[in-house]
Length: 469
Image 1: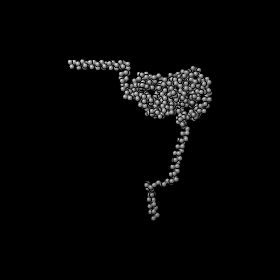
Image 2: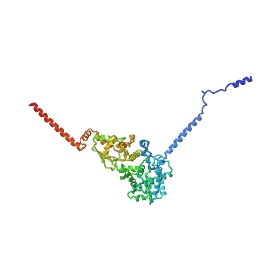
Image 3: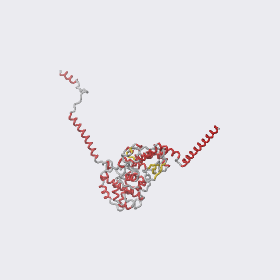
């Protein structure tokens, strides 16, 4: 009996749980704890992000921006420095590291000038405005106070020494006759000026002004450059496209070098900004040059180049200042336009100019007509770029803006072209009075038609008399 019992006990397999059985229930206290933990993590993360916003400057104080992708995607290179990095946005670009030693060398040259204050005084002066300067940059500047001040001193002194040497056309680096590594080349000064006019490559104007005021030798050496504006604007002569930028003087308070360049252009322009409530929103509607000529605007006059923005129209005559296109023109235009889009309070004068040209030049025939009239001049660009260059300035027209300053001009042009009387007069003027020989031909045609009609009448009368007699 014992044996059989033992056998039956060992032969029966252990009882297994059915897979369909539910797992042990979780207590409500455990679930509540997990939910609280998740909530606390989310709250902590959000609070951390909120605390970071306290380090961001108010938008109204920002003047130096990273160019948005929607503006830069059509030509990334137009916004990137090629030779020298200025400010905190491009310090780690390996292609620009060679200039870092030259920047320090220029700092030494500036400190060696007579009557220049000590380095310690420069550092202390900029340290007092460090917080204000940091607020000029949109976004968080990831530099310590010490590194930020160092950047301002080195970059700011480099800019001032470079501009001074550009004005002097100075080829020698020091009294020992060593050649300047920048000015011994013909291309590098031009490239540096182009880099100094990039939106992402700026120093606050107050940095340059502070350093300039601590260096009396810069004012006494160049008697006609007693102000920082004068020293800066002289370098703008590098750009033949913008003659007003180096001849005009702006009384605006500048935010940085690019803003100074823009203020000189806009400040001397007679086309004034309209109130936003009155200004046209978006891209203007205007026929291209060749069609305008067909509709009666037969005179395109190359106006004095005092300011490229001063485009006028009256009684069928459009006056356009000469447009000079050269190597760095597109980069300057794009950065000026990007600056206006990032800081709309500045207005849209440059953007409006580019939009107007985008309407006028739609084909190689339009560009050719402007060249023939002495309005468009190409320097160092291939024939294929004549029409496409200005059409690219508005980034394939995928940006909009509110504040077009040429709305009155476009309205007057369209009214002139599309009235019935205007079309009739335009066609007559275009077909018969465009050139002196056309006037003679027209008058001869009228005289010939009159004589032909007279002869026909005489013969008709003679034939009538013959048939009756």
